[in-house]
Length: 113
Image (cartoon, rainbow, N blue to C red; front, side, top):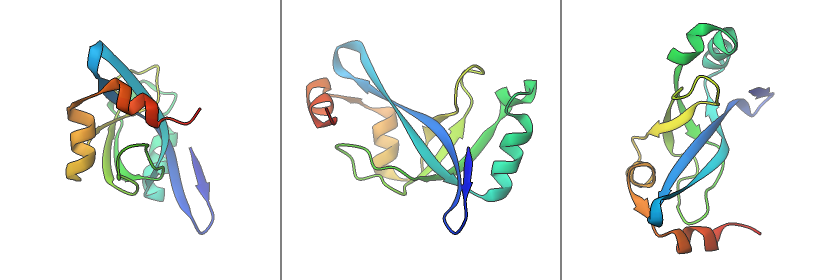
């Protein structure tokens, strides 16, 4: 987590993408959140209440293949030993990324070396 003056508050999140052949690629990215949400996350990050953490924000990273930079995203803790996951979006394209299965050859070919 971090807060950058004149830029905003951010939390790390994981964005899993289901791929053909039973594979998954998980992107680690930053999500811009409200500064009050950053403080709330800090308050529970290492506490039992972390498992119930829910936040919303906007993707602060681009993803290869999809035009979802700055898309709204909902975060939830799905594994209390991991960073929150991107679980839903009001943006149709990001919701599709999260919900559908994608051709692994196309997605992996778009990743940087």
